[in-house]
Length: 154
Image (cartoon, rainbow, N blue to C red; front, side, top):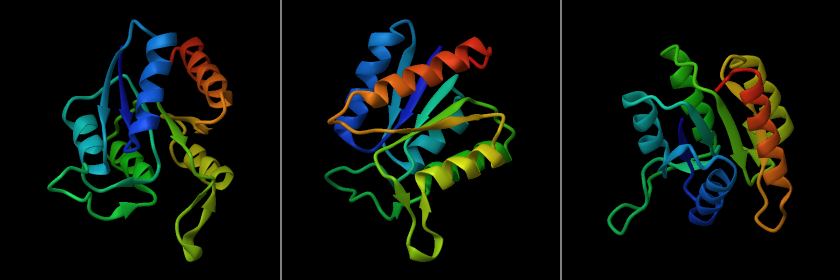
């Protein structure tokens, strides 16, 4: 099983890697840190499962690259591209925000979850609210992955 974490926040990325190592140590895990590198990774060499951040920079941040524009719905755009190419890879969104977008196109996490569920029912397996100060996200994520495994999605 090859899992891909698309996440720009270093601490959150480390926590997700630790979580997968603790509960799913037999899985191989790769990471991408931006919209561009995450999309390229999914399209060039498909994986079995994706943990997807919603808000991310366009490019990987480095000493020479500030990351470009922040994409408030970058994860949604990746799902759109996967759907456009008929890629049915199970995806769970994991985010530390409860609101997305600007005033004219703002969505709550609950609204976003409902839309992604409606638009991508074959590959979207829900959203997990991540909070580094609480352990509840781990329980929620573990429950969603177990449900996915029991339904034969992975």
